[in-house]
Image (cartoon, rainbow over all chains, first blue to last red; front, side, top):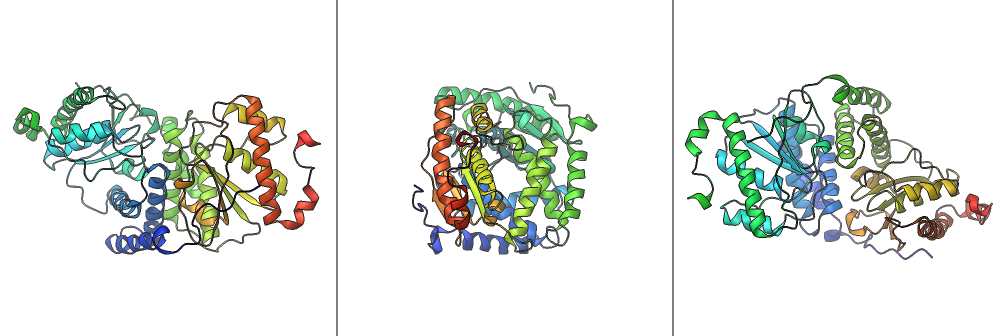
Length: 232
Length: 232
């Protein structure tokens, strides 16, 4: 009655991620020597891979994305421990799918702050990919989504954040003392057409500008009214 | 424009999970001394909390569930490293929500094997709670779901497994060499009425008995036809 093994469990090489992940572990163990134990690095790389694989649509580049995700999480861990200098306020944007609102907010904050704010994003239930209409609106606004991918909310990035912004998923985020939490009430671009997504992008930009003015007051005057390409 | 802080970020005590989680870390660090580093224990407890919080419906008991989840994951890690004796075959059941099929399979295997097989379960996109109709069918069949809760698929439990059974989510699970993978084609109880769920439970039981006969051949003769209460 039991159906036969349907996975290529015995096949070596490309179909098993182990060797690619081990290369990521070796590289990151060197990068984070003296900050994070080799055991933690290994766990984070493999757990990042499994976490992305749970919800990803295409598995081809997952070991590469997992190494990038793990690198970001290890950096966050080292920041939270005070082991790497924090040269900019750290803002974490969280929404449900990490495919729309939090990606738009992250891209806008990165662009508008000119690197004066460091940004991360995550989702409580990450989508298989970034919403195509969101990618289109970002491109039309001069924002890049090429390096972005949906990923689950993890503890390390919350611990490293100075400001946590939730959009539609407030209860999904742990509350720790010493951090600033805001819940932004903005529309959800999921399943919406380009026009609606564009309006939601504008809504988010208003919030981002306000937060930026609070975090980096001297920057606010310089960027007022000159930010995204639709206003040029 | 930015809405005011909506979370009780500044409130100490019960509303922040930190102290409860730290107690869990202290306890588990002692339990796993010599097997897993204190840093890994801390990361696993906090990440388990954040992982459950992403999708849980009620947050009240999450620090307790997180400590139990972390304990299971640390045991799996120690097993995968060969640091704790493995006295039974380790079977991991994975479905989409860890709220129906994988919970039924885990409960059936635990019951039918009489402890001769050790069982874990997980979901690629865990639900807020176990499906109430599944709980009802389990109760009617003499199976207990009182300790069970939906949790995401993690790398540690895959690494520790001898057999990985997927139901409706094959692509979500990492493939490692040396493990037996099976994909069971059974109905999804999500949103179904009690009768349908009951039939799915019977389907799963057939698969479970077959797997049990492969894993513990001498047990198969003893249990044939005497297992769940509806057959008593």
